[in-house]
Length: 228
Image (tube, rainbow, N blue to C red; front, side):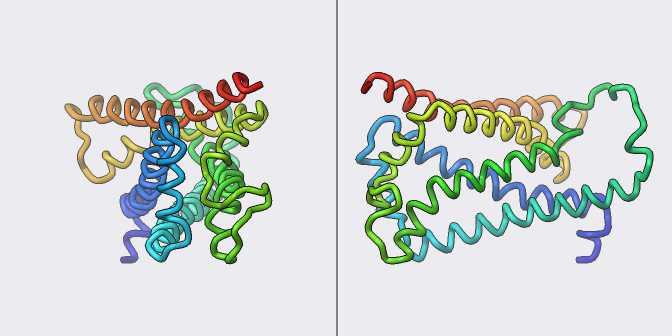
């Protein structure tokens, strides 16, 4: 067990496993978001099915714990690496060949993602599941906590929030494109033959996921203009 936290491979394994929770969180929400593009009623039915039911709460806690572990462990590793490098981190070095920008800025990207996640939780979880947990039937916006489609429509009718969410999604894309193939490499799936294939797959999956989320932002903003 100690090797998980002391060895290089162990630390990468912890980051990979905890990173899976972020991917599961994104895949689950992407599935729901795709539904809302076609049917507000179906999306709200899913929201009502989940709500404050025990299985939704357990799932939320498990995913939240995994994401929290990923963020806290990444912070601990980053601070440890900075202490180990000392003054060397201030030295100007040439760009390393084959090293992506995302791989050298994973912690910064992670901070942007964490801040965006807090914003997202405030916009949706605070106005939906938390309202139900309190036993209330109307959120601070004056709508039912089960009417998620109305929350999405209202939020993405605001240009500023649209821009913020698209920037957030871009940061997630950079983080995932490196993190996903790095996870494959950590568990031993990558070799000289499979490395470029896995890297391409990671980029393709991350791109499709982020395009799906971005489509919700853009489509609902365009619909808001049509209403006006």
